[in-house]
Image (cartoon, rainbow, N blue to C red; front, side, top):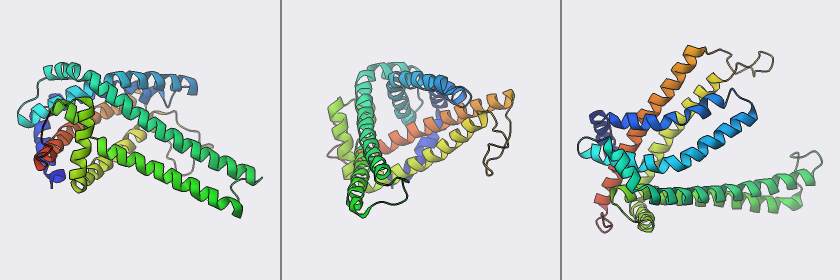
Length: 285
């Protein structure tokens, strides 16, 4: 199965080209301010830092995405060159930026619709019952059911769209496809290989979830310790000194670098395997 067979080439490529780890770690450095300031600053400052970091990542992410995927493509065949980061990032920046903004817009649109539906449901429950959330009148059960079905449908539609277009960047970088053709190619490849792509997506999702939990734990460890009175009974109370905070930050950057390099090589190896399994799509420009 390509989802499993692509793991070994990815590991070999990263071991052969450790520069990939450095590039992915460099990108992770841009997220350190949010990790460090977020749990220790006031809500206003934390929100400002998060907004600035998010804006910077939106502009910089397509450059690193194009360069890192191109370097991963090189590493699978030989040794990745650092110069590829600049050249590929520059050459593919515009289509990747447009595609990234389009995907972000779709995510925001789906999120907005789900939020509106949740707000309507919560408001309706509060207005219909003075005590709120205690009971839902029988007359409103149909409306609640409809809203729930719509919310589930929206989430399902979003997941399907994301599942189908997840290889648009690979098509742009690896195959030098135009933007619309890249989305179309990703959809065709996934539809032709839905089962193996699902396994690949599950593996990536599980790895990302595990890493996300580690980052969340690291962020919490940098927060000021809660007082004994206000801390929940299940939460351990400990303090992290300056040395510990620096160590946690370095650990997060290094782990992000390693996992980012593995993701890039693994995703490119899998994309190439899908292309080889689907001759009618192949690598046409």
